[in-house]
Image 1 (cartoon, helix red, strand yellow):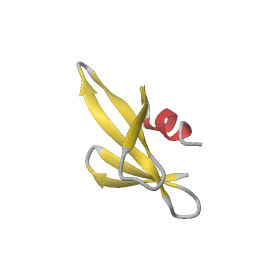
Image 2: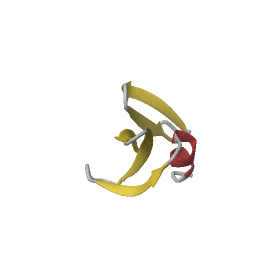
Image 3: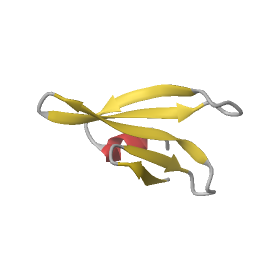
Image 4: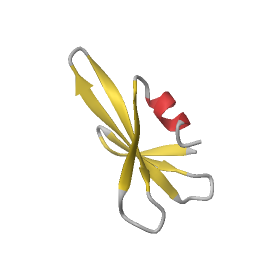
Length: 64
């Protein structure tokens, strides 16, 4: 998996075969930032929130 930044606080998560797995969005919280991971639902345009993480690396791992 790897990420492609599409906006300053939004990344696409792409599988090794090039298909889109979901998105990670950086959300500002008080003194820091959180990273919300959203997985795409197969054959739809819907997204399910997978979790809220303290680092983008941890957010990427949830797609593995």
